[in-house]
Length: 207
Image (cartoon, rainbow, N blue to C red; front, top):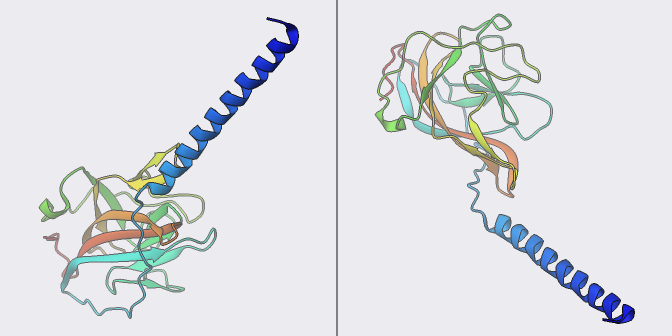
């Protein structure tokens, strides 16, 4: 093959490779676009007066999309609490991070306990001990629920693990929860959605 013919052939080969590479990128992007990501709208409702009743199963979506500013959730009112007092919240959320109102840095007696890959509906009672408290607010999370998600390094999507957690609230009551999603419509990351049953009577019955 003559030098000019070889150069032309090389250029054609590079062009074909480039087209194939571009097609591969387009395919991956299209595949990601088709991925069905569950999304949830942030819950906006008046606080409930749960008292000593058992509440649930209920579903809440906390808008924790902001890069700063924790969002506080109270089981006894089944709602997000703005600017709560030391004992007025049970769980706090910031993006994918979750802390409970318990541990050396907090006033409450709260904590979390992973129950593993059991069926949510099969958990009728939660333990009364073994709960893990939280470090201070900041770039931290509760160790018991730190890995609530699986992370896809290709799509950069967080998906909830099929796990149930037991919760002890700030005032020593109990609940069970499972995380259903992490995205608002868009999708926009940071809308933590969870299903829960709360026992306002103080017992460990969460059926």
